[in-house]
Image (cartoon, rainbow, N blue to C red; front, side):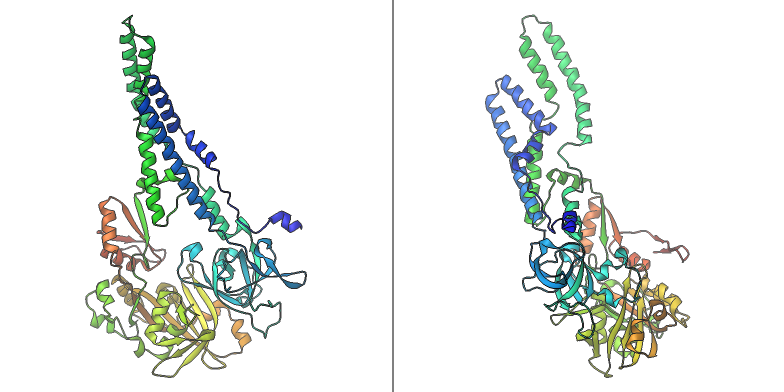
Length: 579
């Protein structure tokens, strides 16, 4: 009871604003009040038809804007998770309970539901693994695998949500598309519905989905049609209007027979003419038309008068892989194992030529077994309903090596040497570390460690570095290829307990160099035309990527993002230029 009074129910109630409340907010805006004041003046000057027509139009457009805003807010309310029943461990037993009643600290059963229900809160995965669709929350189209903390590489280490959230936490608002229940061989609490065991971390508006909704609804200050620039412009015009009105008043009062009431009315109308009478109506009409067009594209705006601010955008930033380039990555070969790169390609090929399938180095199927083993096992791919899902680069590598992914993280060669391996331990890719590694079982007791990552990072981990190491990957990067270094080492005979106790530092040292995998990222068909349109409209275009700087330089040159030499600054390499 105390926890419920502290945290409340697990639901995100977004109150629907009242029509008249929103309309009152619009009706008290300075432009609207000014327009009504002008209508009153016109009525006093006996412009009845025009005045009434303007008033009706003004009220109508504002009412339409309010209705559209209400409709957009109702669409956002649908982002909330609908309540559903699930198994909760309370009072020493499993019991069915509504997701609305969940509290932080509850143990729940989570898994793939027949109704495809969304995860009701932020959950720390304790036992069992899940594949989660996070597209609703992050926009990431590739399902992500979540590992239980019972399989944490370093048992007993303090949990850091900032560091471990991506791997061990299932966010509210996402959808579990596949789950693997905890092994029956291990002791501990096991859900009765064969789901995974999770610990409730956050509920309601404190979840990842709740924070997103709060940002959308309340994260920014409300905007109306008025802004500082418009007021300064009106103030500037008002100076001339006051001069004109003063002149009319002085000259008018010189005639004693002139009606002072009519004279005052005319001077007031001169002052109000600083703002064109149709301006508020035209602005409301333009914003309303924009709202309708955006709604047809599935874009909803909670602040209608924020739309004109889009004209102030002068910088456009793009990701590279998957945005400017396609997801259909092409494996060009394995370099660094011989000198075939320099012999066969004295001139740098373009991305288009690379997309046609020209080899850069040895074909993958001609490389040593260890190199093929690194490509086949060092990944985070998952099998979802018989289909392989995961990073496009890792999928392309698995296709190129011609191995197949089976259940239980097993991989098997399709042709040539009959080989298979089973992934036993993963040290997932980290953007800070720029590498990932796995430990795989070749036989029941024989294990191999496989590592891939940025060439400059893995260089320090090899027991022997080839003399042409730096020149090879630098030359390939300058040609626009994406280059990853591969390494391995045999671990010998180990027990499963020893495998689970292996630390990342022990796995990623004294490695044997297995070559560079060379990947080309063909440009999307419309990338060049879109970038050209942005340049023609005087927008500054920026490309943001985690790839090698030289690769980024090549792509930016092909897209005409830059036409000058680019200065490349790194923390461990001297300043250099890429042309």
